[in-house]
Amino acid sequence: FSSVVEVAIGADMGAIAEAHHYVEKVPGELPFLLTSCCPSWSMVAKKFFPDVIDSISNELTPMVATARTVKASHPNAKVAFIGPCTAKKLEASRKSVRSDVDFVVTFEELMGMFVAKGVEFEETEEPSSFNEATGAGRGYGVAGGVAGAIEAVIREYYPEKEVLIDRAEGLADCTKLLKLAKAGKRNGYLIEGMGCPGGCVGGAGTIIPINKANIAVDKFKKATPKAIPEKELV
Image 1 (spheres, rainbow, N blue to C red):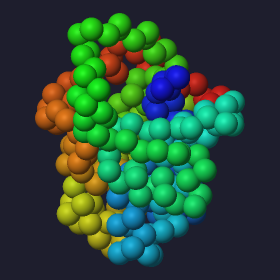
Image 2 (cartoon, rainbow, N blue to C red):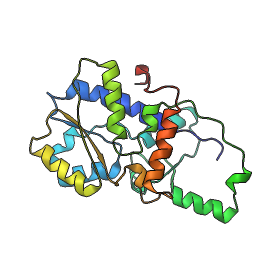
Image 3 (cartoon, rainbow, N blue to C red):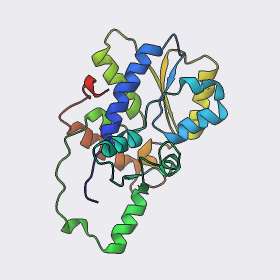
Image 4 (tube, helix red, strand yellow):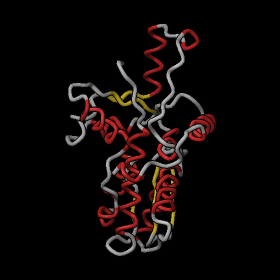
């Protein structure tokens, strides 16, 4: 890799956009707003609950938003998304995304490459610190992180707006929550769904336990100079 970019940059963009979407459309034009960053969650909603399709946010996922940002300044770059999520492979194969994301590699696959090439982390230099993203975007990967980031942005930039939050992790609980929403029992809510228990950190391509991942993400998030993104990002 010639360069590494935080996908949390795209998450920051999404947090601002979905905060604005919620404030402008819920309640009123939409009964509730479903977050869009987890492809498994949005796929379940679209396939089994077609009545709620209009309530799924149409904002780009952090992966796609970050990839498009990279290609805007480096149009000939090949972009590889690296993370714990295997569903991102399916997302990257979509016609609307495949020109933005060239490869999807899980943490497990990447570690296999390191082992095969004899890469030892103890013998490598520490990477330079990232300063582009905010704590909000860096927390997207854990259950509750997406809704938490959007809520924080709303409370900062739209303090007069009341925010109702509900969330589910694991597709079984996501399905239950979607049934409640369809039945009109979550009107006015911002609803976060994560296909994997624990959120993205519990994805099929992870290499550490969820509790350790949560601690690492929280530490990284708290060390971030900025808590939420600037409103001008959108």
